[in-house]
Length: 253
Length: 309
Ligand SMILES: Nc1ncnc2c1ncn2[C@@H]1O[C@H](COP(=O)(O)OP(=O)(O)O)[C@@H](O)[C@H]1O
Ligand SMILES: [Mg+2]
Image 1 (spheres, chains in turn cyan, green):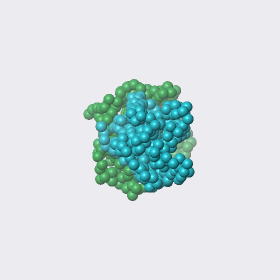
Image 2: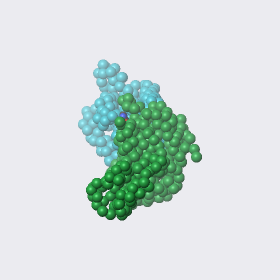
Image 3: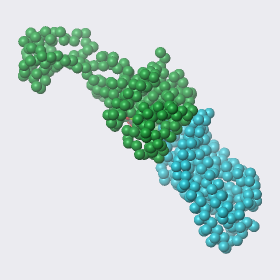
């Protein structure tokens, strides 16, 4: 393993983040505050509690998940797409690094940024509502696995994309709707029965539910299902990356 | 001395079926400078990209320092530095960071003294904290060279390093190349400028349409293929070549003050002695005699146009 190279990529990618640190830091603070004003105040005045948890606190895990997923995807996909786009990828390809090392550098950096933003949101939210974490270990595990797996997904997208439109298409058209419809801001038990069934096909439901369970001990689906879902998703992304590595798909012609 | 770079029957066919390299075989000895000359689309960049791992070879093999570029890619690539033809740099990053990244990618531990040394040599030191997007084209090219040198390569590829750069940078570049050569680095450069190959290369390879037409010692190439001309200046203006000299295939310069005789240095007899005797016998008085060696350019144009017909 060329760990020096992994560290070099990681540092270089993090530098991009630190260059815009204030923006990286302020935008989640601002958007979280806005969510509390809009969802918490407007809707929260009608929905007092969900399964014994105040509505404001109830949406915190979903809010974190929403940002962590979209940030992990956009950071990782942009991180690898941009060098392809401007041509600096030549250096990765001609360096004595394996594909695994490239993935570790880019995905590691993207996951770190997403994790940072998740923590900022959690911290910001704690100014608005009381937050208790019933299962801290599970909470950390869910958070880390989500950062990792969605950064892997983003990396795959970045390799796949041939234009900036394509790069934004999947997060915009697939991931964001799935997250919003995945019970981030409501309990799926609040839905009519038919929609409760349909929602079960949305993988994000399992992640949000499991993550919320680690906070409040309440879940829409059994916690084992949530763990299996996130683990399965991580393995699936790794398998796709392994295949890309084997075939050189869309990297070396 | 064993070849540091050894290319055997290398072929590259792109996905669209285009055959960019047709069975290239080439050995390059350690410490030499090879200039690859060829027109646009000849396959120079493809050859370099394939050696460096940016594209995969279709068939054939390449080894660098005895390491196969596919099976021992780490060892092979660790020896190589590449300055690409196209300037590609992360626009918002700083000069020093991108150079450090290159060194790290090649697995070399951080060495600020070495990086400083390179940046100073390339007149980039006072620009080390500048954003790359703020640099001029010539400066960007220097940064690419700094990146390639940051990990102390044994073999350096320069893909058209002086295309579109100013005279100053070109001269600097030649100095850098000379410097590197004296430290034992093997250099392969591609160029459009024949004067460049002529000025700095030890060997010259000529490539067209994916085929390597020849690789020759530069001096030998010019001596073997070069034609020489003698310009004989006479003391009076003449209007035509005198009859007594008609056997000699002479040309008269437009001004009428000199005769030009072209001969092949490879020929058994150049005919110079007889020519000079005959000129004297014809009653012309010599003012001066000059010889001219044809440039690589003439050789190159001759070869490439010969290939076409
Ligand atoms: N990715 C590619 N796909 C298809 N053809 C290509 C590709 N890259 C280069 N070529 C073709 O291969 C030939 C050689 O190109 P190149 O190696 O860049 O030439 P040179 O560097 O000598 O100008 C050209 O005809 C070019 O159009
Ligand atoms: Mg080229």
